[in-house]
Structure formats: C-alpha cells, structure tokens
Image (cartoon, rainbow, N blue to C red):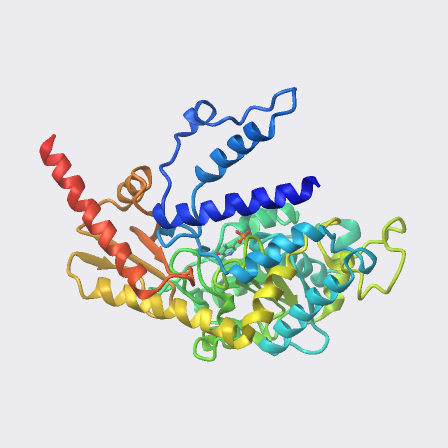
Amino acid sequence: MQMQEDLSLFQKIATKLLQKEKENGVVKPIPPKELLNQLDLELQDEALSEENFEKALTDVVYNTPRTSTSLFFNQLFGGRQSKGTLGELIAAMLNNSMYTYKVGGPQVGIEKNIIKKVCELIGYSENADGTFPPGGSMSNFMALIMARDAHNRKIKNEGVSSKMIVYTSEDSHYSIQKNTTFAGIGINQIRNIKTNANGQMDVDALAQQIAEDEEAGYKPCFVNATAGTTVLGVFDDIKAIHNVIKSKDIWLHVDGAYCGAAIFSDQYKHLLKGLELTDSFSFNAHKMLGVPLSCSIIVTQDKANLKHSFACDANYLYQTDGDDYNLGKTSIQCGRRNDALKFWTLWKSIGTKGLEQLVDKQFHLANVALDYVKNNSDYTVYSDEDSVSVCFNYKGINPKLLCNSLYEDAELMVGYGSFNEHTFVRLVTVNTCNEEEDILNFFKVLEAYVEKKQLAEVNV
Ligand SMILES: *Cc1c(COP(=O)(O)O)cnc(C)c1O
C-alpha cells in the first residue's frame, strides 16, 4: 500500500523536522540564485527511485524557512497549535470540497457551526451568516463586493457606473487597494484617512472627507476599520466611526485579520467595542489563534447580502439539499478546500476558554516585551499598550540592516515596519507556543548579535 508507506515517510520526515526545529530555530537561507544548484528541484522525465525521491524531498523540507520555532517573529503568524495541524492533516486525507452538502457532509456542519458561534459571540443577529474565504485580503474583498452591491442592486448586472468612494485609514492593509481595482471601483476612489498619533483612523477627518465627497456628488459606500493594523497592531475606534456614518447608506466593515480574534477574550474584546453595529467583520484564525495557514472567516449581519453578491446557479453542481447547506452559494471560489476543520479541531479540544487563553497570552507576551524595551535605555519604543506588535529600535541601528543581517546569518526571523517618519523593528508576539523566556531570549540573541558584529567590524 503506497499510502501506508507515504504516511510512514511523513511521520519520519515530520519527526525529524521537529527535532531540527529544536536544534536550529532558523535555517541558513539559500540565496535565490543558488537555489537550483543546491537543491534537486528539477523535474525529470523518468520516475525517481524511492530513495532518491526521499532525499530530494527531505532536502527541500529541511531547508525551508521554519515558521513554527521560537525564533520566528517575521510575520503575523507563527508556532504550531498541534490540534490545528492535526485538523489540517485530516482535511488533506479527506480531500472534500466545501461547495455542496453532497460532497462536504458533516464538514459543512462544522463550517456552519463555527460561523454561527462567531456571529453569536460578536452580537450579530439571527440573520447573520458568513464564509471562509482564502485569506484576509479576500475577506476584505468579499466585504467590499457586498457593500458595492448593497449600495446599488443593479451593479451585479450592469457594472459600476458612478464614483463610489471607499474610506480606510492610511495605515490599513494594502489589500484594500487591490480590492478596489478588482471591484471596478478604482484606486482613485479610495480616501486614505489620516491616522492620529496612536495610529487610529482620525474620525473627524473621516467625517469631513465624507461631507466633501457628498458635496461633490460622489457616492460614499464603504468604510474599512481595522482591528489590529498590520504594522502597529492598533485598533480603530469602531463605535466612533459608526457614529459618523450611522445615518448614511455606507457599509462598515472591520478588517480584523490580525487582531480580530481578540473577540474571544473578556479582557481585550473591548478593543472592538461597537462590533455588533457593523455590517461585516473578518478575522484570520491563522494569525492570533495559531490555526495553520490559511484560515480566514468573514461574517455579515444580513445573509441576503452574501447571497446576492455570491450566489449564481449551476445545475451541474447544485443537485441536492438546500442552499443553506450548499456553501458554494456564498463563497468566492467554486472548489474550495476545507479550512474549517483545523479551526474546529483546535476549538473543540481546548474550548472557547482555551481560545481566550491563547489571545490573552499574546497580549501578556507583548507586555513582557514592552516592559523590557521600556526599561532599557538602549531601546527606543514606537508602539503602545494593548498591541501584540512591539516596535522599537536598538542603539539607533538601522532596522532594515539589522533585520536583514539577522536573517542572512540565520539568527532571528523578524521584520521592520514604518509609522509616520520612523522605521523600526516589529516584534510580534503571535506565536502562542512561546513563553516569557522565549521573548527575553529574542532580545538576548539580538543584543549578542549586535555585539558580535561590532567586534567583527573592529577586527576588519
Ligand atoms: C494579514 C492582514 C491582512 C491580509 O490577510 P491575508 O490572509 O494575508 O490575505 C489583511 N488585513 C490586515 C490588517 C492584516 O494584518
């Protein structure tokens, strides 16, 4: 049985990977130009012997950047919630597609249940529904399309023919730009509202801009608020934004890709106060909750909007059961991988309280990091409390240079970001497998590296 053998091979490779991750948190990167020389990536005409196949595969696996170790802080995900990984592996074995009940069966119930729980948790009504898009960018896209179509029911057939205006803060995610082009709205129709000193959308500036656009005869149709901006991890004031637009025909979406999972925490959900007043909300379970990539959820107050924008008939596909169970009627794709199971396996095993602990832990780790940099005069701090992005510079060293050489020398994976005129190292504490000592170790490695490099420079 080939499958049994391949499962054993998987077990062998995965076990060794776990061991290697412990020994070496960062792999030495292969420069892109040397990749084809160093690894056997070529596709040849003849079949490979099992032995050579295993060698080619393991070489690739062991040289791939390690995102699950305690030295990876480079993006807004990290670590490995093993019950989530288990769900992902099972989803691969089952290989369902989520478009119909006929093909998805109980997996459809799993997806619907997660969506229902999330809607209840944030105070959306019975009428609410949602789906699992292929990532946070696409969640924002679906929100924009629903807003566009809710604003004018004819657009679905006739296309966009007026200037529809989209509002988002200057520190929001770049998918908003891409999405306006996909939606036929156009980048020129985005108003990048300035942020205040904390990095939140300036709500007075928003109100003023909307008034100007209305006066010019344009059609304000969509406001994107961010729950956890990509660089600073800051939460826009949803309630204040809602106050500005509540009497207007404008869709309010909350992009919680990064930190929307704070809804699971009693202590931190106030950061999304007013969420129940919004039209749609999305978050990435693959960021703060540690579910394997990708796992993004969007929910909306009135499921009619989801149906209107995303349901089309196809009698070769929808042959049994009702629309409510044929999830392809509300998704952006046709064939769709099962992103729900891996979230369910994690949630089922640790409970909603367990998810809360994951969220609380990240804020705790961020506080540990923030305390450390605040209490050490070699650091300049650029971020604030209530954020899982801790932004700083060390001894005035150019952050771009520092992050890139830490990577090239396989010491740490961490990135930099900018806010206003400053560029800084951005340490994110989203890896829920990390402990306090891992965060302190981050600084230890960084400081030792700077020291070592300086010695090296002296020696030159
Ligand atoms: C990560 C992120 C996104 C994009 O999510 P993807 O799953 O990478 O497409 C959108 N918005 C914010 C605020 C993010 O941090």
